[in-house]
Image (cartoon, rainbow, N blue to C red):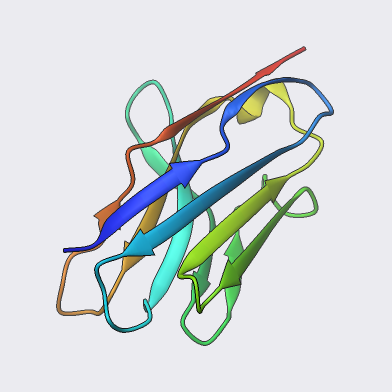
Length: 117
């Protein structure tokens, strides 16, 4: 069973930075996709950034140019460096991984990001 441990959320002022980290365990193989989603108060989860097994990275439009997703495959860790944070980035951020197409993905417990103006 895949388990995810997230860290790095917090409260910052507009223009500051945060780094989110997610470490996965419980899978012997690499993941076909790893990424970060955010959850709005209406409980909708939307993609922030993701990386596929072959290294292709996808960013939400709001994240492009400000956020950088990186991966350490050996450690099964992804990091999301978030720069120039704005109040509209405030949400709960969830790590997501999927081991294969034949199994469901796994979610982390969520980490709060709060940006004040």
